[in-house]
Image (tube, rainbow, N blue to C red; front, top):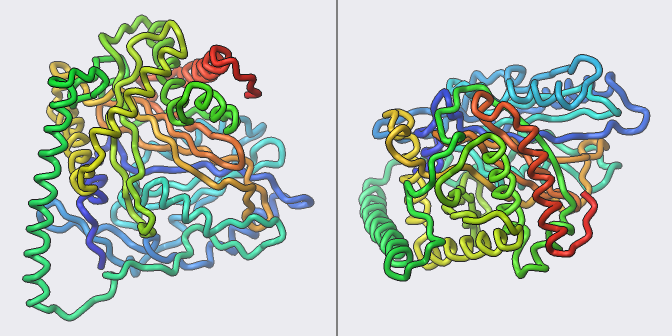
Length: 462
């Protein structure tokens, strides 16, 4: 059995019916030449015969004290996890998004291993797709990317690529060991010392934020509960709506570089400009800059394990949106300020701080405090690196990777981007009752990118 750490377990602890904590991806393929539905169904039958490895063969067991561990599911049914969906004709994008929205809205069954794999056929233009859904307690975007690398190939001739769930690596502590009471005492002392260090680190982090915000008068620092109230910061309900778009990676890089910034700065500014227009068109006027959660990978060079090694930075976005480049400069400075505050703080302290902030949102929702308290954040914006080369699965070329993420409590919008083969693929997910016209927001995102590129004097081909 494997004990989940506090951060991984936090995704189970903060999960609710209205805020599932699984992540997903739509992997879009082109059928190999001369292949069709019969080939797809034969391939599905073959991969169903492959037994799952860790953590795909594990189910969650709840311990006392809000702790969780993984145990092997000896009664696992692969047919429950590996499923087949055929879109009705004509198999257009609207039908695909509706099906994905329904699939992604449902909680994963905690009595079984926390993942699903769906083969989707019937798409137009000789396309098919994999939709993979897995609980965030088992992996983050970086971990999932590693798994994807393991089950794909850069060669269309390589037909030996395994399914995602064929894993042969297990954590070092997965083997049962004889109880060593001396070691238990040593471990207890070590954990106590680590807890003291973490508590000191969290205190240091909070002190740095207060110092920068109030004494150094850095207006770019986003404190907890400092986000403005908006129409998208309400309980979302269970239903979800999705939208996808993509951009040339070099186009984004060129826009950021022209202003002394990065691709991430461009993404954050695009989202801010798009949301400002969306609010304006819907008669919503937030009082002050939006605050975004920005998940950040905190792995070091030696961190090659699975699970979650990320933190959530709170980034204050632009105060003015009249000039795209001025908004970009503000967002860039906010990201720099947020990173500076978190620098030099122990990694565990940063993670625990992020978990405490996330729990604030949960308490707001559960205790119905959103009517009187400001939200912890307004939306989530993240950027995850993916494969740089063209990839194949059993000879089928991957055409695109569209991330489908999760929504925190009191937050009806998440925008996640994943890079693949020279493009950046955006997956937008929202509460259907709160943002029913997500495609409109996506069009504003496209417009924001065009406005930024034009203002920067960078020619692009969207």
